[in-house]
Image 1 (cartoon, rainbow, N blue to C red):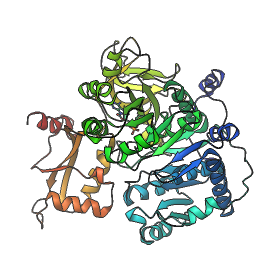
Image 2 (cartoon, rainbow, N blue to C red; image 1 turned 90 degrees about the vertical axis):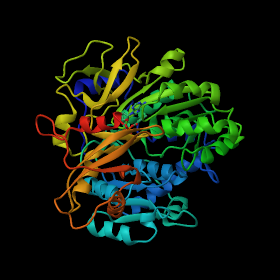
Image 3 (cartoon, protein in one colour; image 1 turned 60 degrees about the vertical axis):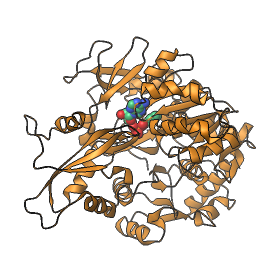
Amino acid sequence: MTIEYTPWPDDLAARYRRKGYWQDKPLTSLLDEQLQTNSQGIAVADGSRSISYGELASYSDNLAAYLQQKGLSAGDTALIQLPNCIEYYISFFALLKLGVAPVCALFNHQQTELNSYCEILQPKLLIASSSHALFLDNQFSDRLSERFSCLTTLLLDHHKGNSELKQAYQQPMKFPPTHLDASAVAFFQLSGGSTGTPKLIPRTHNDYLYSVVASAEICQLDGETRYLCALPAPHNFPLSSPGALGVFHAGGSVVLAPDPSPTSCFSLIEHYQITHTALVPPALQLWLSHAAQAGYDLTSLKLIQVGGAKLSIKVAEQVEPILGCQLQQVFGMAEGLVNYTRHDDDIWSVINTQGKPISPDDEIKIVDKQGNNVPQGTVGRLLTRGPYTFRGYYKSPLHNADAFDDEGFYSSGDLVKQLPSGHLIVEGRDKDQINRGGEKIAAEEVENLLLGHNDIAHVAIVSMPDSTLGEKSCAFIVLQENPPTKLSALVLRKYLRQLGIADFKVPDKFQFVAALPLTAVGKVNKKALRATFEQQ
Ligand code: OOB
């Protein structure tokens, strides 16, 4: 059985192979290579524990064999939700070795998100952690198993003490290497989204491995790299840009932090002599303001990557003087395209641009509303295709018809301009999404949940400027006539939390209005709603 996805056209696939981007090797090959030469080297540490490359390889073999015995096989899918811990990479590689494609939920996702992923993927396996409130007892996992009959295997990781997951990966078992088709789907990335239902992004072994290997080279990772993974481990940035997978490819070590706060990270930087890390802009701001008085030695840091949301020039300028290391801006997306400022870029480009694409074969179009190319240096909508940019969301033909142009370019929803050097500057966004300090909120998803409330007639969620997060979210609410109860922000927050959505999606502000402004064609005029904050 194979997992369906929209393939690249034959001529482009042939080109990507000819140019050596696609090597027809599975993603797991980066682990096999370390096993040959560096099996004693530390692959991952999470504060109190560490495992070598040899252990990562054998633990993931053991788990793959255990899951095979339980009936999982190539072409199946799985849902993983784990905090930043060693078990995340063991599970990820075990599933890849089996040919089972996981979607890796973020740890702050709640029942609404997990239900949606199960709905789309119909996974056979769930790997979750009892350190998440949803899995403290069996209520939610029982409900999932009842609702999704495909879900036959649940592996819970008990944070402290023994668990089925730990027993499974520690029990030595032979897992004979199986042939993996490198053009098949390896796993699913999560889309930041701009629609009512979350979308999944199939990533193949070939395309993902290329982005990892090329990124590791651009960021000059090597066996001495010690990378602090403080953002959620499954996110595309800390996983592949070059992220943990790039570090594994280079034979360095990944150190996991529970979150990107200075309190969690600074002692780890000193202890492990961290050389590289990846942050979102709000976390960088905290690092800058705490570096001096924290009393930790941060001098091992060589490179701080910052991405996920626009970095202000003022903050970018402070990185070298305060943290004493190089800044790299990263503008990427789970759908594929990743841009980096380079080591040999001039200071101006590092501070003022969001970098240039990984690959000479990343094709960029910048177009106006009618789809015509704009003159160079003019702001327009960014479209892209290339050797690691996907060609379609999983099982979403209608949405795909809008998300791609007729040449197969993906429309990212970002407004950018390109300099003659190829560097891109992100100027804004033309998608119904709020970027809350790097965490993406699809407005429609939360609007639909609020519309489920009996007393709400209309709702529109837009971004409002915020000095720390860049943007926060505001819900404009029109109540039904004569609602029986008095609705307040407090009541609506509680309502959303009871439905179970990630906390960052709960609007920061609720504004009750008599009516929503409409455009000439009768759509909600979100531009006008956003403008109300500019006037304040
Ligand atoms: C990364 O991936 P996603 O999928 O969470 O979000 C992608 C979107 C982009 O389309 C853009 O709107 C925004 O996030 N974004 C940035 C940015 N980096 C991402 N906007 C302005 N400046 C930046 N530097 O966020 C992601 C994936 C891989 C590497 C880095 C970030």
